[in-house]
Every structure is written in structure tokens, then in C-alpha cells.
Image (cartoon, rainbow, N blue to C red; front, side, top):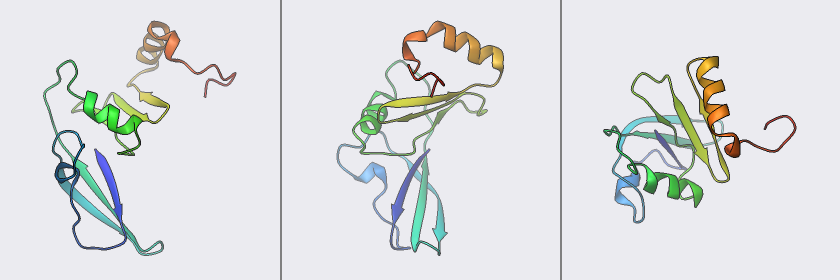
Length: 115
């Protein structure tokens, strides 16, 4: 899922229409925020998993061309939330979390609280 913000209620160019953006996304929902006079647009796309299929998306996030991207399985039991400088991974069970942590210790933050 991807987000975009706008000061207008009019539809803007979706990520698929903008240069240097990864794979197409369908406009899914528009959420007005009257307090801040903005509109958040949500985009979603679905793809069959294959090695490298989200590389362009991850590069756009690392370059801050896209923000608030979530990559998940279709049942939303495994969620990857990349951002410039890191990522959060949400897994279905503590056991899965512990296996992932033990398998990828080099990915973990060196902060004493693990943040």
C-alpha cells in the first residue's frame, strides 16, 4: 500500500503516472482531513512474489521518493514497513519474530533498547 498527500480533493497523478516510480498502483481510497486541509490517497497493488519484485519500490523508499509503504502477504500476517534508513517487520507470532531476529542479527539496531 502506498500513500500520497494533496492540498486538493481533485485526483492527482497516481504513482504509476510519475517518472521513476515503481510498478503501477491502483487508486484505492481517498481520506480527507479537514483539520489540516489535506487529502490522503491510498494506493494498493497486488503481485505474485518473485525475487527482486519489490526492488524498485524499496529503492524509491530509500531515496524518499515514496513514503509510508507497507509490503504484506495477502492475509496481512507478515508486514514489512521500509523507510529511509531501516524497516519495521511485523510477524504473526512471537516465535516467528524470534526466528527472524536470530536469523538476521546484523539487521538489528545497535541501540540498547533495540530501537
